[in-house]
Length: 140
Image (cartoon, rainbow, N blue to C red; front, side, top):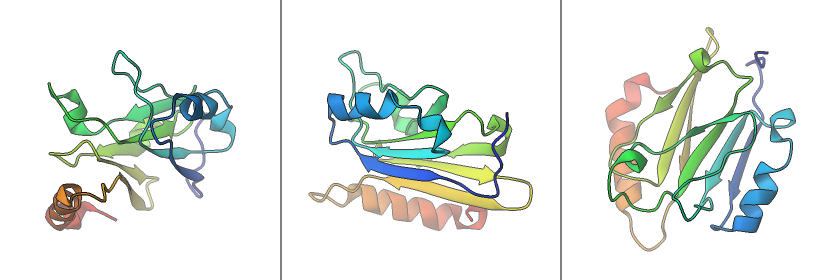
């Protein structure tokens, strides 16, 4: 069943890499309450996986798929009630700290970014600003 895209229920949470916090999040029936979940510092299993709540698709940073990538500190979970044809991943290259999604209901576009800013360096901020400047015509 497709969720109506006339409103969005968004949760943003920093799990501080906590296994308990992550399990608490994914073991609740999140699909009843949330359409998009933005997670910073998710718990990563010993096999390198990030567990997702039931009935959600996961958006990883593009660099997650590269060998020897840095630790992923940003993921987005999209409720599977939202048709995959009504959203697309927004790729921010060169970082595992930024994920993005663009939603399209036919009448409007909405771009959502989940950004983990490490207070000790500005590399993520520079890459994100460069991406926004480059992609500005396609973002809403």
